[in-house]
Image (cartoon, rainbow, N blue to C red):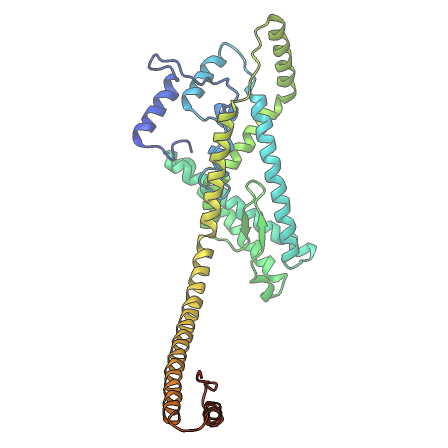
Length: 374
């Protein structure tokens, strides 16, 4: 809701604004309730961004301004002039509900493709069990709410009705169990909630159903749909009155054209939405990245060990080659010094040394023959 990210001081300030308006300290606010960037659905207490906050269907923060002080200003100004904000709220809610209904139909199609097909008779019995389970869940949620509000007698009456429905449900479950094989009965049969598009199972217990029907997600969708039906009743009449009032104000020169927010505000809201979207994407992929890092760390450790062993072998081989090359050069110099004192010509001495060195190479030496300078 609106208070979910506020400190205690900010909550007290917002409560005072809600009771007394934005001008409670005698200072005029720079933002008015009839500005273009103020959420009209919030002024009517039906913005989906607030009603579905911190649920499975959380759609993030609204791109328009939400301020309880502006709501108080609107409620005070609405007494003297009709602003027809219910028409704007109807368009907002109708688009949101239509999108949710499309998702519900898509979920139904996916279930039909993945779940085992049943006969018409078995499907009818399964739907009866689902309907009775939904009645039990709704009445349990209502009984708990009434008990919390102090309406004990009404809560006890609902609990008596729940017990009667449970008996009927037990008989319907037995009839459903007898109409199909035991292996197929153990499989969970899911159904999509028509209100909030959540999945409900035929084997869900009463506690699970009560938590669903009394939860914030389901109750938030109920409030949105009820408000939409309320606004839909007088939609055509209110739209005609809004057009007439607009034409009358234009004739008198009192109509104020709603201007879009400045580019700075639009860019700031777009950056805020991008940051929130990026934050949700990172939180969803955090566990997946952690698993990838653990696997790559183990593979990298093995590669590092292999590369170090190869490096050691390479260095050892080069060191051996340098030592053998030095020994080879020493032997050649000794041979040259020993035969250099002979009376033979220098060309014949060089030929004799080359033949000796070639003989050693054939015996396993790694180095090529050495030719001493003349």
